Length: 405
Image (cartoon, rainbow, N blue to C red; front, top):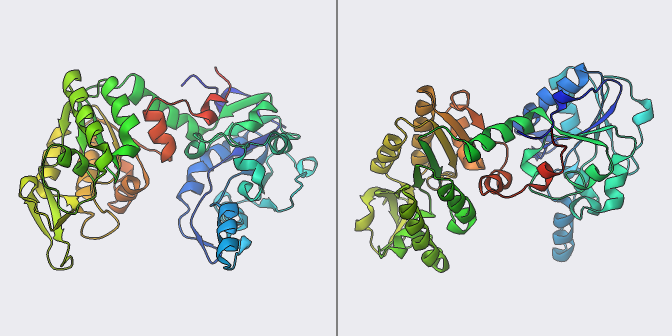
């Protein structure tokens, strides 16, 4: 990583603004999953231990967009569900110390903070200046701040006031420990992977993954495994009948181009050989695993089949670097999570044998957690879109804005 880390600078007595990602699910004022809060604890604790005056800031949901939709539909809008106050309370429990909460629009508690104190700002996206990257709002965020720390990799692909704009008004801008870890793992996978290097990509749409696929082929991934609904665009482009499975017809020429690129680069390109299907007219009672070539017009593919799970697992044998993003099927609907869970187990087993594994994307991470395999994965990325854009070789504004070493 060529960016300065929070560990590279002195923090004692300084006002330190830490951009965290506390965009967590909250229902009726209760946090349903505090994974992201726990993920930020090492950086927050480090800043406290170093005697910093800590100011935390995050977004939560899309309050202004939701408010506009509610106004257009004439439905009630409840701003309280976008408050970070429950997060501050949960963080207080996790840290074992009080995290004060600042709900006022004009934020100026710095003069009252002592070394080791922690205060959390209200949801940044309640102000339109955040997503617009408004310089005035960014300047307000930076007022009185000595050090800016970005520990929210999941938002680093957005040039918002708290991820990019603020850095123009603070002299010292560095990566937090979570951000540092993301950049180290993803950077090595992209620029200097141990080989063999295997990438597994899934999800619904080829269009979402094209930049990543092309970047991985260009950087000579050794094997590229494609699952999920996106595989059907490749199959239809090859002339297979895919029934009523999800296909992006306009992407079929690109799919053929990608296969040709992989072949020319010497990349082993693997698609499913079988899949779990249902009859579109009788989905509840018709699930079965069949070979891809036996698909007829009335069937819908919803997951990779057991043969494909075995083929993909075998493809991971001997791998030294594995990157996985995207589910193998309709993961959110049992039993069509089986393929994704099988891949999660295969990645964990490969990691046990010495591979460096990186898992990113909501459903992929959920599968790893659901299967109880998180501690057997080298790195679970906190970024969704940010991870994809990084692997595609794009410059992330929130990373580029940090100080170089």
